[in-house]
Length: 206
Image (cartoon, rainbow, N blue to C red; front, side):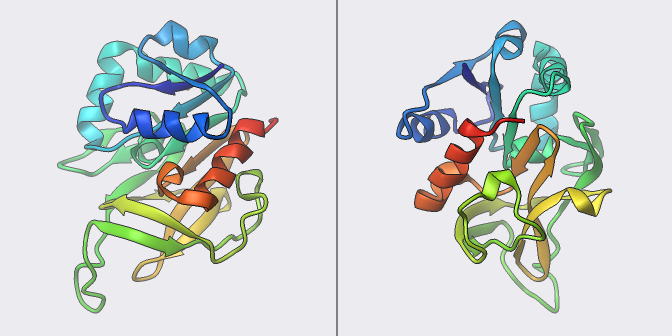
């Protein structure tokens, strides 16, 4: 079973529909026990870091996600679902994350000189790959995907960075460590390229 975690912060139906179009049915789950029964798990998200962590903690879903990751089964985080993997997030204060990946989540500062770019970063940007990982099989460097975010992650270990994009300098677009993959962009909104990425995850064997 491919499961999508519902913690009141995600565009769940868009993600579910994107997998369905690939003939990969996905079930939306709300209970910790259902998370732990999944074969593959997706943590999507649109919203605020602190509110998301509060919900994950109160429902027990945060512990379930951590326990699932420890089993070695495939895990995919999307947008806020990537950011929550960090140890700390700095949106509206300092807040503990899930602590799966060492590092933090901080606001983009490219709306300041010399860049004077818009925040949130919203729209299509190209991917660059330090090394080709399983999530990006058959995805050429320079492929465009869709971003909507004001915060970005800074992992302690640069070797975990699976993709970057350029927005006033390099911005982490994806990370990969063992069975954990996560993207800052939205593959479910990234048309053909996004479909390849989601299929790679659905077929990925850790």
